[in-house]
Image (cartoon, rainbow, N blue to C red; front, top):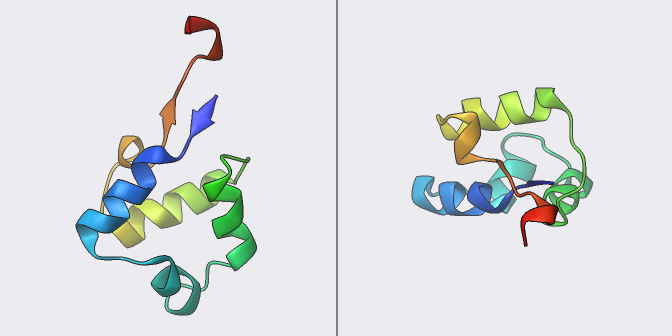
Length: 69
């Protein structure tokens, strides 16, 4: 399963808040909610987040295998 756990740490490191994503970068609050709940988002959004945060994809998402527990 793809999870967005690294996103929140990267945002903290870069000093970008969810408020800034919504108001400065026009990312909807429903999209932020989808990220918080590890729901599907578009690759375009992932691309936008990489540009906003000046980071790589692995700084935003990671894969956790549910069968490896």
